[in-house]
Amino acid sequence: MGSLDLTGRVALVTGATSGIGAATAELLAQRGAHVLVAGRDSSRGDSVVAAIRARGGKADFVAADLREAQSVRQLARRAVELGGGRVDILVNNAGIYPFGPTEKATESEVDTVYALNVKAPFHLVAELAPAMAERGGGAIVNVSTMVAAYGALGMALYGSSKAAVELLTKAWAAEYGPRGVRVNAVRPGPVRTEGTAGMGDDLSVLAAQAPAGRPAEPQEIAEAIGYLVSDAASFVQGALLPVDGGRTAV
Image 1 (tube, rainbow, N blue to C red):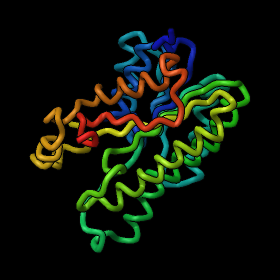
Image 2: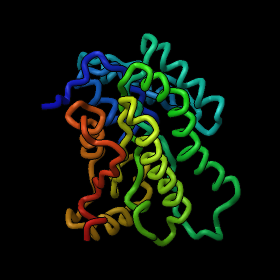
Image 3: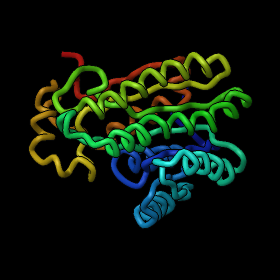
Image 4: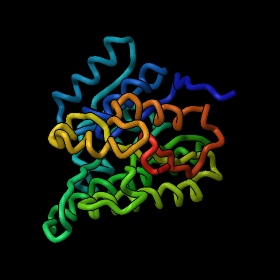
């Protein structure tokens, strides 16, 4: 049977200074991975790293602005350096999720959403997956959303960017899977994080539409990611795993 243990592996997690990313970084470190915590806010990043180290885990912060392709590629190279020449696990978690009418979206908003949600994962995979394939193994998990699976009022921009990520997940599974690199995605529903705090009661209303009837905690999404990057998921490739309390099932 496959193991959840990640001892000896190097994991790069983007958007890891808070929310799902921080919970994922902490979980992967608990399971033995050397985690590279990527984000823009160095103080929050250092806090996540300190918490991991306090529990006996191994982690380093890597600063990166994922809106610029050059910065994304520099992040990948810096991660390889910090990882001792390798990155075995990539979690593309960083992203933004503005909601609102299509006609109200500005050109800069559209560009930023696609830069962060689509282009950054694309460039990271381009930089890191070939070396994983050369070594004959690796795992990539892209964080999508349940609104990539169905049309939702006010979520055209965000949902469409994540729908692109879901197609990339399948295409990368076809491209790199034969050489041992497993590529999958998780599709979270509403999650209580610092980033969704501003939604207030709207988050609970959205969550109430699902059988679970409540928002998720970041750790619940992290557990799904932890499974997908582990040997326990050795035969899972190109999958889109809903972690949405059952919303897309009903």
